[in-house]
Length: 432
Ligand code: F0G
Image (tube, rainbow, N blue to C red; front, side):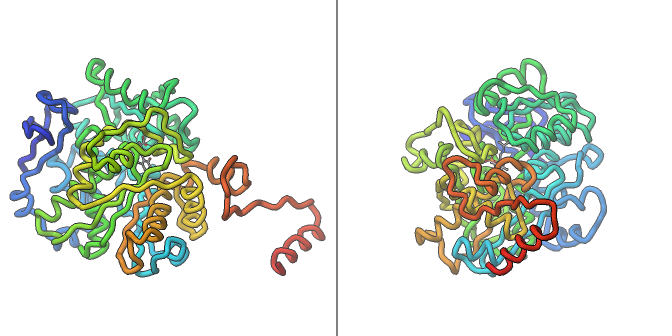
């Protein structure tokens, strides 16, 4: 297969094995550009169906099943857990909450990946490319999930992982994973944007292979979220595709995946992409509100959804491209809206971390505003596992989140250790 790195602005091309993250001429982001004519010859819906029924390496992976669209690479170089194959849920409770219907709302749970977030899909392609390049040390800045995923894939691929995380600002589940998988963990006294700037600066000089989503090979793996979703929907395109926006890797990857699938004739229309940001951390939304005339950055982003607490997203230009390609939009949700949506997603038995639930809060807001319709087919992406951020969940249910309504709190009940009290409490609840 013939693929190159291609600047999204000046269109300059570079070989796939050149160690660059930005165009050397104009500084813009790079795409991995496949020769779609060649890919078209090699793939078909039947081929993907056939691979779906196999346990054979690497096709049992929900990423490498679509390998012609991901990365031309020898099988022996692939580092896979395997990842993907995540469920697509229907939920009456979630549908009622947002104002949709059981048939029209689907939630794809990327928290069901091996390390509990969608990042695994980008890490399998990113760490595989590190392998191809012979890189021994990989690095990233992270709000938590990227570091957990990279540390795990590096361990599997026998590489050293160095993670830059904002001190005290990532969820406990994620920090514990980075440490446990053996990542060398630098707690930066600053926020994610500071950590991101630092890791970009030192990577080339210190010969660290950078695995943030500024690395275009990451995004090729993340495209598989959409390819797998459409495969699950029998290639029937929903009206809307909804995801949270932080560093904007997913939004960018989704746009590219959709654009390519249409070029390849796998789909004949595109869903509208709705990117949801937290109110206090919404640089894309603020830019969108200017018609993308201004590229707005947020100096001190704030949100309980720490995964998306990002003020200077590295994939801004690619996300704008995705929104333009899909006639998409950007919306914001409040902290209360995020946590109440989370209580519903969790209470439906699905469960996800706060940032993921921005998706559901966003769908609710857009239906209430009449922008989405009850009759629209909506696919929402849940990005991370419920166990990633136990503090947010427990504090919500204990009503210990200052300033939050905690509308759906399910408070634990303390009971003395005797049978009468236990019976009295249970009867009181059942008779209420
Ligand atoms: N949801 C979760 C659970 C995330 O971990 C992230 C990003 C996002 C949504 C936003 O996705 O960056 O593609 O727009 N987490 C990154 C990290 C930044 O370091 O783990 P995005």
